[in-house]
Length: 265
Length: 247
Image (cartoon, rainbow over all chains, first blue to last red; front, side, top):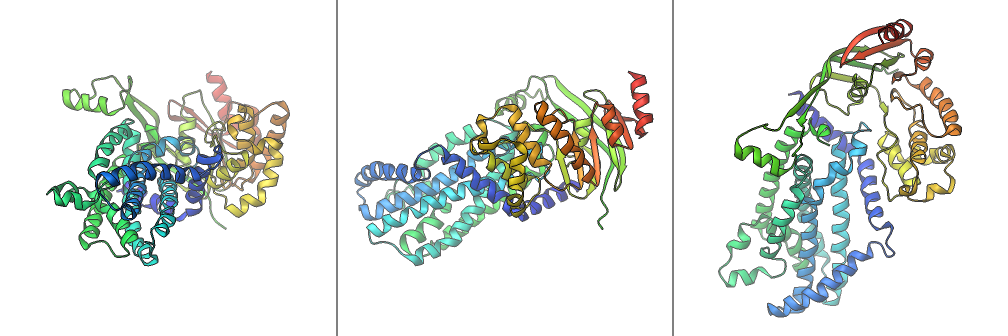
């Protein structure tokens, strides 16, 4: 009983000290690019290469019109990168903060939110890089970006859940990030990122995406941005259900490991 | 005025783990599959056993005991860093721990940013930090090194930086774990003076040390720990005397 209360009050306390986790997150971003000459521009350059290379090849391969396919690919790729971070990099959340956790008495949940801040900033940089591309193809829609907000919130909730699960489990099982990395690599190729859903539908392979919760997480953000309309209701429901399941797991995992965590570091 | 206190009831801390640690998935799976749960030798250490303590507003308490007696563990429980495996520890007041000065840095960031981070983590607000920044920087005497990433610092420089930040806050419950020997001779002298001022500000001070003179000058009350248990708890002079006799 005591334990549950502590986890709950600690989490609440963590949320309240937003200055701390926000600052730590922003510092992490600064640190990531500090020693590089052009800083966060690297994200955009890498993306440009990816789109220019893979985008054109795959677009031709699947016979897609470029002005639809390139923004589609970019959006999917950026969101996918965010999901992957929340499942793999997050395994090191507590390990990276060990020096802080053993020395300062802030609840350790602040480091979980700090991870989300870092991944979210990178996600937003990537997404906003889409805007010039959309202008180029005359496909920009303000309404679409506004309609994407609920989807982004769902995505962030899911990612925070991922981070909780992977940070706790990753501290206990240090090889978890590697294991998940392998699984995600396979998932990347079967999730509609490099190819549109219609290709699967045409070949009667609907099940490939229908049972893939990550597809819905991507869809609720990508669809509105690209089309200017809300994603299908099914997508929101499935993504929401997935978030719920992730958080149930997260609470179970956190409850089990929270009091032992500092001894595992 | 706020009543600041520390209250420990039946606090016990047990460390458990496997000796030849196969902490990864593989070890875990191997155990599950073979059904030989806990087959590698496990260790179990009672770092603290049923500690009952009441420290109230204005008290300055010293901790003595051999290495491994549980002094650091006790301080970490008081700071809320180690959750007690049994019993409960309640603290009223803002806890300021001063434990290690060698860890908890962002290596690729400048000294300035590390000051900001440590300040935040110690409970300062960003405005407070910005206001105190010049004073902290001056105390470190690191000068232009503050502009460099801390990965270029020597261990003594880390200590200066951490010490300067930690002692710049206004502590309520101050927990100190044997940190007097900070830095080179010149800095050590300065640090000592600052430390004394700082310790005077604390509404509650718990302080572990092997330096009896220091204990006598700061603490009216001293607790002698051995093997995770309180051997004696009383006026510093008496406790130190019986501790010295026992050795």
